[in-house]
Length: 325
Ligand SMILES: [Zn+2]
Image (cartoon, rainbow, N blue to C red; front, side):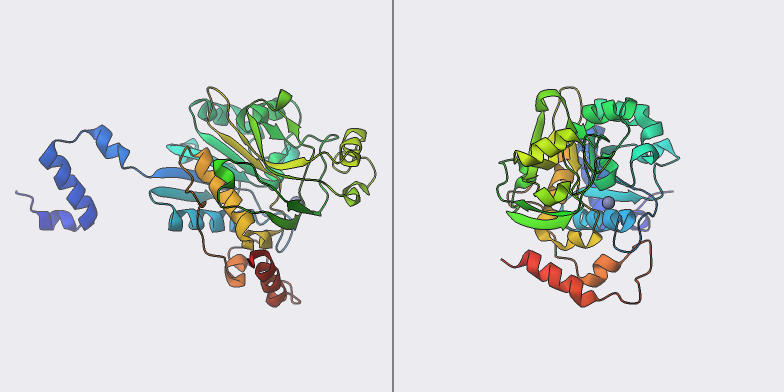
């Protein structure tokens, strides 16, 4: 039986057929075929957590993945939910793994350090958002220093809610087209970084106000070292990039408690640029573009139903204030 183009078309799109015919015509190699393959980015969203509008891991991942798929050519961002995938093949071919879920002793990766370490050594990028930057000191903490250059260490780092004012951004692909800007979030700070900040570039830094030290000392609330740093006005790094020999790139971002903050164009662009960068791609000169989400788009995919007193117009006001130029 002879195959005609029309028969192929039932299974292949016209574009795929055209490239197939081109391959046959010009004797292209498999390597060239793979070169046109999309860059796969896997978001791993943790389980539901804090209630409406907070720690919205799944909704946050879906919003960021859609923004990437809609605006970056040749990217294939996929979202896995309910924590670390049971099927190890789920991460096959990924150029970056993005974790956004609850951390500490229940961090999704605590029991999969070896798997992600092997990927990091193969050049796969790792990005962690909000609570996903906190892991226990020891094996997990050490892995985070290797993968992303820093983590939330209890009795050293702290988790107050405050308005961070990012007045100056460094020259780095991740800050292209970003800020200055200010957003209120549960910005963890005084992170445990790699010795001497080796290979670590701070991306978002701000002076933490005295109000962040109102609580008593505790694993997440305060300690003598952080009190000293805040009193001295030492800038606190709440987002950072890591580049280290023999590993993929890394990125940590401590905001992302308040889901609505994804409505800030600067906040969202920092995350999108970072994910593109850790995947080894070039960040566009003005950063990754994406449409400001509507309140309805921010409400989509959340783990909980909106409370009866939810007022969309209050969220819209925040969005307008963040994005007025
Ligand atoms: Zn939080």
